[in-house]
Each structure stands twice: as structure tokens, then as C-alpha cells.
Amino acid sequence: MKITLNGSEKTLNDTCPLCSGTGMILNGWTGRMCDCQKKQSEIARLKNAMIPEEFEEARFKNYIRHT
Image 1 (cartoon, one colour):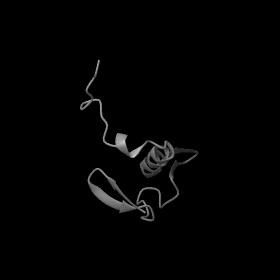
Image 2: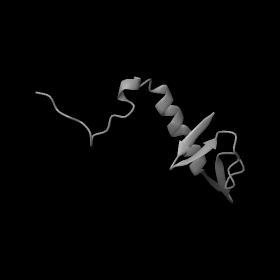
Image 3: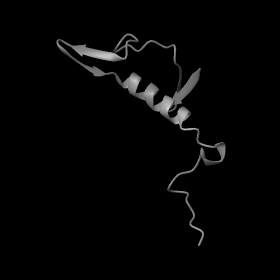
Image 4: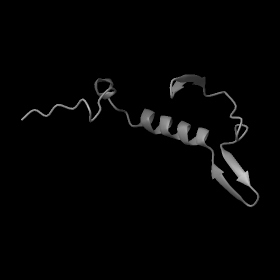
């Protein structure tokens, strides 16, 4: 699956150089979610939101109120 993030196209199979594909960055006894995992999580949430295609380009900037 190919995705476009910030103008660059990537595949979900690309290995992240920061976390080596684990999704976590470990610092001794602590760890945090890697930015690549956050992006993949956001993509999954948008996909699972089941937003109709007619609203894919909807933004507050281009909203027109009809009253």
C-alpha cells in the first residue's frame, strides 16, 4: 500500500530508520511511540472512520454555510 505524507510517497513496508520498524523508540528503561507509528495510526483511524468520498476534500477553509 502506498501513502503520501508531506508530499513524499512511501510504502507501509518501508523500514523506519529511527525505530527499525518496531514502532517504538527505547531510551533505557523508557520508551515512546515513534513518529512513523503515529502516522500509520492516523492513517488507520481515517480509513476506519468510513468518511464518504464526497467529504474527502472538505475543509473548514472551503466550508460554505447555507441558511
